[in-house]
Each structure stands twice: as structure tokens, then as C-alpha cells.
Length: 113
Length: 117
Image (cartoon, rainbow over all chains, first blue to last red):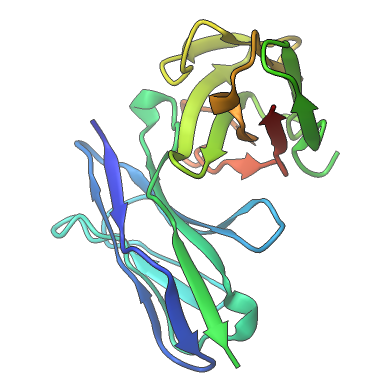
């Protein structure tokens, strides 16, 4: 079945450091790919998405590119802030399965000032 | 309302009792999803609705779990004879639909934190 694998955390960075959180997926066909973020004490929020190969999703300085050849959707940010500390989830969905989301395990990001 | 709402926000119950969790999706969203977030299992899909129909119930852990949706809007997830392993945060999400491009983005509610003693 479909699955998502993302790098284990926690990831601890200093403010203004470069961030990469790796995400790879296994799925047939053409899934849509997502990054969701969960800030402390808050619910899941969509951070960005990409729905076809080579699409780049971006939001709040975060970016991820849908790479079909490597089945990856790595999350990047050039300069992290303390306020980016959260849990980040990579996920996929497929229309033929009702677009239900399949999530990775989540990566905790801690940014120190 | 502007977003997905869920109630109650917290529920503490005794083992063996039944509980009902409610989800109110974004107005106009025809698709509704239930997920469970627990420490050991991460985020798991439970069931989804398109309108009032549930084409995929594959994620429901046992026959103690059931869900319904009425009027294409509010959904209720019911857990009968609760067990301690049912303790988790139950999340509801809605989207525009399930059959068209661009309808796939799901918006999540704040969740119901269930604790079974």
C-alpha cells in the first residue's frame, strides 16, 4: 500500500540556519503531496502542497518540490525562526482512494535563539 | 463557521462506556474525514464520507467504532465499550470533494482529546 517515510527527529537548529526535512513516498499513479504543520497546542495546518510532478509548493518561506523520479518531497527553508518550532508531517493522497491522507511519522523541529 | 469545529475538545471516560465525538465541517465541503493521532501509531485514517455515504471505512480499528453523517454536514464518531487503547486525539477534516482536481486539500479541526481510564 501507499506509504510515506520522513526523517526522524527531533531536528534542532539555531535561528537563521537552513532547514531540510526529507520525505519520500511509495505510491502508484500520481498522488498529491502535502506538508502539514502542528504548532505546540494547535491543530494541523496545511503548510504547502503540490499536485503534479515538478510542481513546487511554497508558503511562509518554506518550499518543497514534487520529484517523481526520486519519489521525494523534501521540505526546505533558508532561514528558520524560533516560531517555526513545530511538528511537520509529510503526507500523500490519491483521488482514486477518496483523497484520504497517508501521513509520515512526523518530524519535530526545535529552533534555538 | 469559518473552520472545522469539533466537540467536545476533551473527554475523559471510564473503560466500557460509550462516547460520541462530533464534527462540524466547513460549509459547502462535501467530503469529511476522521483520523486518529496517538503516540504509538502516529496519524491514522479511520473513515471518510462523500456526502452522507462512507465509501471507505477501512481504517476503523474494530466494530466498536462507527460513524455517520447526516444532511451532508455534521458527522458523529461513536466508540462503544471504550478501551484504554482508544485513548488518542480524534481529528476531523473536510474538503470540497473527492472526485475533482483541486478538491483534495483537507482542513482540520482542533481535535477531541479522548482519555479512557
